[in-house]
Image: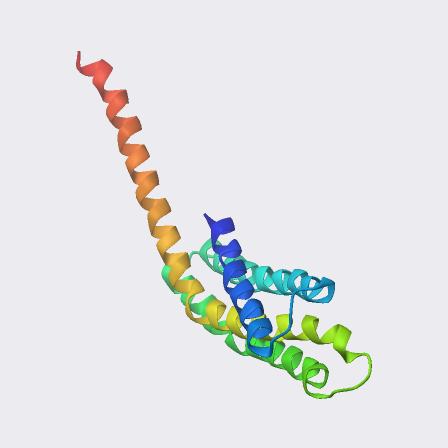
Length: 158
């Protein structure tokens, strides 16, 4: 279940990278694909931090939703600072028409577009998705438990 939560960050990062290339009129090339690989690493790390922090708080005895809320709120500033500094660091590649930047420009575009959408998704939607996955997992476990207990009682009743 938690792997699904972590991997849910990838489509949103991809959409941001594709949109940035499309809006700028750039095309896919080796540089943009390298940017996409780096972007996926950052997006997965953001999701992994949320899941890991939530699990650590649950292990300390906090209820799941309280732990998730605390983990999500506690990571807002670090995520915004990380994404913000990365975007600011890449801005010169996007706005300065220097010789040689035409090669790195698609990489920077993919990273900036993907960081914006991925960070927004991680902060706003990922906690909700995590709750949905957690609740579904709990319901499936409860249903499986009822089935196991129901099968265990049937032979003793006859």
